Image 1: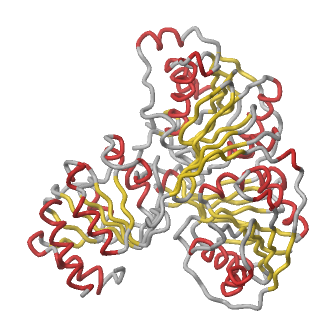
Image 2 (image 1 turned 180 degrees about the vertical axis):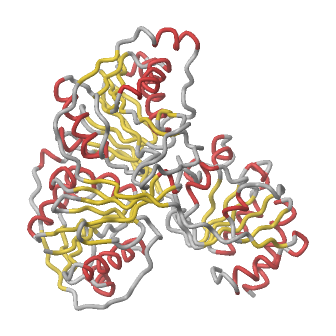
Image 3 (image 1 turned 45 degrees about the vertical axis):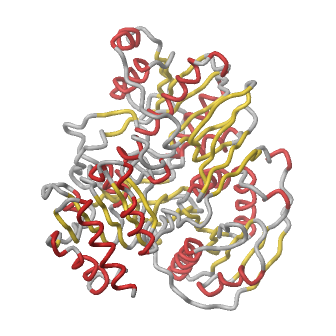
Length: 249
Length: 322
């Protein structure tokens, strides 16, 4: 079986976000670009499954929708251990656009498992994985915190409000994964970095599709009021303020 | 034209989140001079359904048959899409919880509807349809314009107040016929915690970080939470160390919450942690380091050792509960 891992290229999560002139986009000066944290965990789990011969997973491909400037992020995924990569050569305008592009690629090349992180740390959309599954008319399982295979059948843990379910669906399917899917993201070793240079990255041209949404403007979150400090010896005062001033207890 | 809201139930019961969704839908419908249709899927009794009228749902579609026992994303999306078309819905409102994240994008594709996810207040504008949404994990908010005829909005939990606008709601019972070949999700086993306040539902959350020093030190924190009727949470290092279960991890890659009060104990407040809690109405922080970034996010702070401060807070809460 073959896994396709969808990866998004996002600013490092500690980045101080600044906006470009007009506030309709972010100022990318000096930004470190990384694999979206959920996608990194997703890739890690895919590689763990491939390492386990009993899983039946034979290859792990990563796909990214983005311009050539995203190549370092794709190479990083290859250095971590993906076998090959596909890049849809375009600027990702919205989730609809990205999901359309990935679905078109999957229609031409067969994958058994498509893995997506539950959200990206830039647009916090949480929709690309679900859209891909519906474009392809295949099942999706969301909020997956564990995935394994028994006799080529997936067994997943789906997180629900106040609990978990063990769920299975027929292959092919889309797994939308969250925290727990892998313990720690796998880190590229020197050998992996060397190997990544010669791994294939297939560049495909995008399908024409109009986005459905557009960011008109960004704004900063409202600044919080200054912190009111209470002396540690008089900690009970905090409870008094929460009850009588903030009125939240 | 109408505003459609998917009102999820838990074992046949609605919760605060459901009523937040209906209150929000009523607000959107008012802006558009139209009415609210609620869609309930699965077995919910009539008295429970009628509660939706209190928050402004004019019509309640009660879709129920044995196919809906557990969540199949494809089936649920098909049912909601079909009803939306029949009701001529121009806006569909769903929670931004795990269920909403599973079905909203599938409905989007079926109806070619753009999604505004994680909205936290009413649309900024109806024409062009523009919503206010969280981006960059709370470090920026976007004005997102949705151009499609049908729009889907997923509402962040605890971000919209309950507003009572009682109407006489009518219930329409529906037994939708769903293509059986769509039903592919098999649930083999369910584990549920009972009696615990869910982190995502809680009005008050008490959370511990590395400053708690050891998993053996959690009892005063749990006691404080119990006294306040609060849920317990933790920072990422704490769940990574296995001191607390990963369900408690609050932060960018863990749970994103918006309680009325978040009490951070021994948490320094890394950007990734703040991303999960910055929508809290009030943050109170206890930390030994006066320069910890958590104090920049907090309205109330105590500089001190968690182990010394927690028992004092427990005593103070016992005092006011007397």
